[in-house]
Image (cartoon, rainbow, N blue to C red; front, top):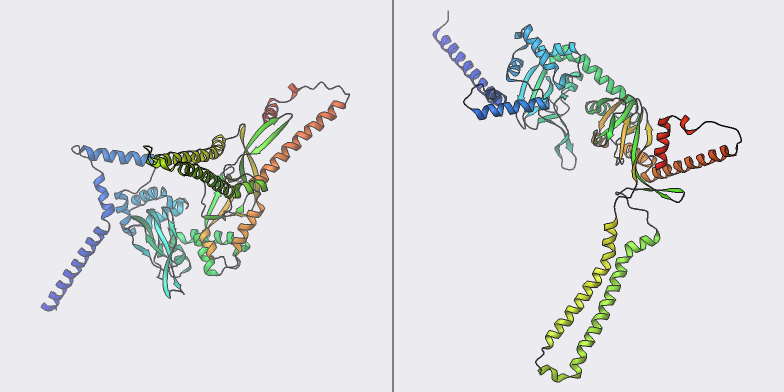
Length: 515
């Protein structure tokens, strides 16, 4: 039999639970107010014209940018518990999730399973999503917004823990899979930069749906790292960090991998398969002189080669000019002072005349200054005329030369000069990309600095390529002369004429001869 006191206690407990649920609902509504307010954008009235115009402009921009966004109904459906979703809702979510950037890497079967178990989460600016050394409970996909990745390490100098930002993730990236895959605590802290929308996959669902495909990706990165002896000295923790930071990319033939504003300059490229080539553009001017052609390299970024006389004139001419100017001014001042002092000594009675001597001094000093200005202008005129005449040389043409060819096992992007250069895929190329900052942090044996210096020493410079170009043109001309001399000494009758040569061959020869 339930007593009156027990009834009152149960009533108080129910009231307390209801109050807690209400508070949780209010907190959840306030936390998700950013995307809940999107419902105001769907205005169907006719009174507020300004609002309808703004809505139409947003729709046009969305179509132009082709930006796929989740609507408020999609987000509400993704917040619904997985066991309560119907088959129709799962099919709809499969169609919606399949168009997201973060799920394009998975096959259709995996997408279908993910649509049934993923949840929508929103985090405001500056919110910590996962914290380092904590237990892992979920996997996260970024739909919109950016997330900063930071590591907390112990500073021996300050004797305190310090947080260091190691990277930033953008829409389409995934994080949190390492801790779930290896059953270890979180290896980094992830904090939102602004308003961030995520899709969450819980730990149990990850084991059932995504662990197999993620394990394959992980194994492919580990296999790629094992192809290079640079990573043999890394421990298991460093290898795990490398697998997290690595990106796998595939390039089709004639695709620009790096250069011309394409590619990621803060990443180092490791070629896994295929071969690519580095191509450099040269601007060469060809001028005909008598029976020969003179070539000159035009590059406004590098200075011309200077001799010993040019070096002396460049770095010591200012000192010599300064001495010459000081001697000229001293001689002029001495002559002017003597000319001014002479009339004063000869006729001292002129001080009482109507002519003021100060006016004469002013006229003499102005004359001296005018002469000095004239001298400085005369000295500056040649330099100004030389600068005015400098420009683009005539008959300037652009040539593309293959600098080097890289196959499987090669690396590039360490910081070598890429001015007027680009790396182009000659065949289907698979590359592994690792952040340059992370590699420098793991530069225990100074291997990456040595690789960079090796590349800078082995890759030919622009001047070396130009010399090779000139020698090739001279050899081509010499070969043509030898062939013409040999053929002219023969007495055999040959009825072959220039018209028997294909037209496209003649066009290429005419183009080369014009140069």
